Length: 157
Image (cartoon, rainbow, N blue to C red; front, side, top):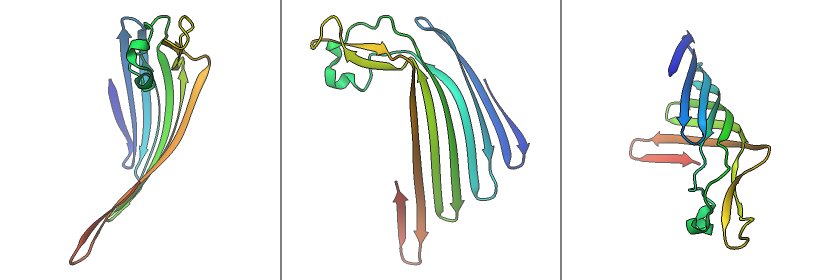
């Protein structure tokens, strides 16, 4: 379910909610709310939401260990993520720049560890105790400059 409400010409409030009913990990709600402000050439957005992720053996770390070394998934809980972000963008003519800052708290984060039953030979996924925190920032800029005889693309990662 999703809803959007214009509060003013330059201000929009959005919200969404989803219900997931996983056969192994139960039911989980995933709400999200976002506020978008567009004054002139600027775009500013603040968002916060929550979601869940059911454990899967296909994690990045298993590529190095090998899937055949992984013990069966038992006793795991779903990861619960609460995340927020702030995004700012500016566009003027051919130039555009964006900045994003986000953070997340993960309850029951899944981690690959050496198996207690067969150390050095097998690996297993376990839920980490406590909250795992993640924070990051990203900037992106694009621009196009046109002159009479040439066209040049500029991209700043």
